[in-house]
Amino acid sequence: LLLLNGRSKKIINLSKLKTTVHKQTLILVKIIPECVTISGWEYDDTKLQFTLNGTAQTRDQLLELKEKLEATEEFTKISFPLGSLETPLNVRFSMTFLTKN
Image (cartoon, rainbow, N blue to C red):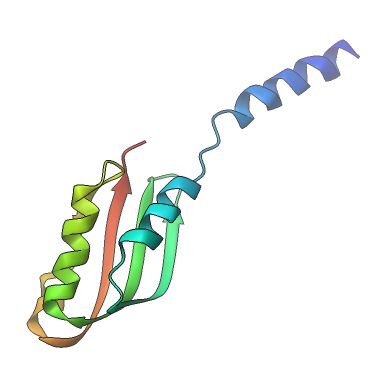
């Protein structure tokens, strides 16, 4: 019984270390411009890194998304390939950024 109690305490302590991205996901939903379509997203909890894949109607809207991410208190190190900016319309992109946890 003592062994079981000891293991239970360890599990409870470890569960406190688990991070969720609920708050960050809600922020993303609010700041993504209407003219930007997200086709997929991933979160790597070992790196605290989001990856967004999608299409912006224009190059300026992709830059607007980047600026909005930078303006939050939640995200840092926002990057995407510069080749994404070569196309003026229907800009496909893959963007990565870190959470500031």
